[in-house]
Every structure is written in structure tokens, then in C-alpha cells.
Amino acid sequence: MSTQITPTTAPTPVTHERSLGQLVHDASRDLSSIVRAEVALAKAELKVEAKTAALGGAMVAVAGVAAFLGVVLLLFAIAYALVALGLSAWLAFLIVAVVLFVFAGVVALVGKKRLEKLGPPDRTIRTTKETVDTLKGAKPHAA
Image (cartoon, rainbow, N blue to C red; front, side, top):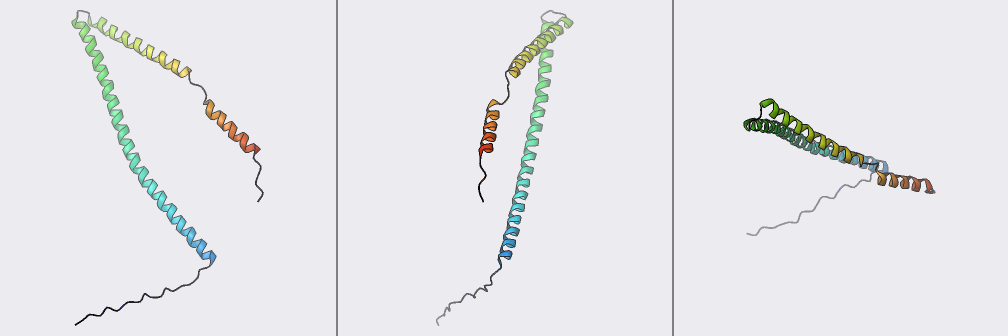
């Protein structure tokens, strides 16, 4: 007994020509679908990124609050250390406060000096002016 394998013939495709208007309509519809899908994908990615950024920002904020509280406790510890060295409590806390104010003043002055060094974005202004001048000198193309 031998099995015979008969070749199958593929059905002949039905060909009908579409008009140019139909082709343009289909292409436009397909392009719109692709754009909508890309926008949906971008929204989904941005949603995930936004959640990640929000969580990271919240964690940095919590760390900042914890660090601030740590600095406050450290300052209290320094003041009580001065009390333990024999100073009265009011004088110890006054010394810590004055040192803290001096530190804040120095940091503020250094920050102010750095801000004074800032100037306008000269390079951006220059290149923008060059671009405008180039566009003003350009001649329109004959269509």
C-alpha cells in the first residue's frame, strides 16, 4: 500500500483594482491607526514613568525631612554637650544658634555671589539672531 500525495493548488487570488481615491483613503485610515496606536503607547509609557518619578520624588522628600530632623537633633546634642562641659543651658543653645546663623549667612553670601555671575544665554541669543538673519536672506523657491 502506497500513499499518494497529491499536490494542492493554491486558490487563485481574486484581483480587483481599487481606485486611487480608495488607496488614499485606506492609507490615510492606516496612518491614523498607526498614529493612534503610537500615541496610546506613549501615554502608557509616560504613565509608568510618571508613577516611577512620583515614587522617587516622594522618597527623596522623605529622606530630606529625615535629614532635616537629624540636623535638628544633632544641634540639640551639640547644645547639651556644651551644657555638659559646664555652660548654662541658655548660653549653650545661644552659641549653637549663633553658629547656625553665621553658617546660614556665609552660605547665603556665597549663593548670592554665584547668582550674580549668571548672565543672559549669550550663545543662544547669538545663534537665534543668526538663524533669523539667514531666514530673512533666504529667497523663496519657485514652484
